[in-house]
Image (cartoon, rainbow, N blue to C red; front, side, top):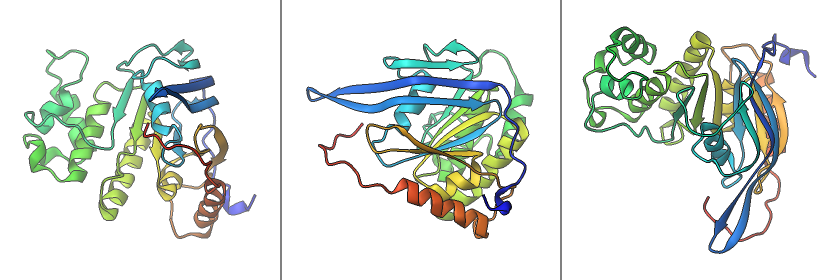
Length: 267
C-alpha cells in the first residue's frame, strides 16, 4: 500500500460489538425477502465504522438489529459478550430526521431519555449543549431551529446516558452540503472527546472516508459484507489530498457492481 496511507492506525482494543452469522428476512406481500445474509463482523472499543451500500442492502436493518429495535433474526449480535435482546441505554440512536419532541425545548429534548428522569443533572446537559454548540438555544423549541441545529440536538440526546455505542442512520442525509460538512467536523470532535464506539450508515462515500477508521462495503440485497477497507489517514482529513482521493476511487470501484434483477420492495 502507498506509504501516504500509513498514518498510525488506532490500536485494536477489546471487541465491543460481535456479529456472527447474522441473517434477516422479511415477509412482503407473501414473498420472503432476504435482506441480510451471513454477516460476520467485530467492532472494537472506541472505533468509528462506516457502512456504505445501495438502497435496500440492509444497512439500516443492521443498525436496528444492533439497537435492539429488531429482535427476530438468525445469528448472534452481542455487546461485550452479552446477547442483544432489546433496546437499551447502552446504545444511542440518531435517525436521518431529528425526531425531536416539538412541545419540548432543546434542553428538555436532550434530557428526556436520561436514566433518572427526576434527577436534575444540569451539569451534564450544559456539557452536551456546549459540545454540540447549542448553549444559546437551550430554551428554543424544535420549530425555531435549522435542520443542522436540530440534528445537533438529536446527537446530544443520544449521548445523554454515556452510551457504549452510538448508532447513526444517515444523520446528515437531508441537510445541505455546507451544513453536512460542518456537522461531520463536529461529529469528529465529539468522537475524539468521548471515544464512543460509533457506527455510521451512509450513502455518502466521501463522508465515510472522512469520518471512519474502517469502511464496510455492502453488496446489493441480500446484503453481505463485500469488503472492509481501513482508512489509515490522520485527522483532520483533507478531502482533496491524493491519499483520500485514492481511497475514494478504490471504494467506488468496489461499490458499483451491477445490481441483481429482482422485484423491488421498500424495506
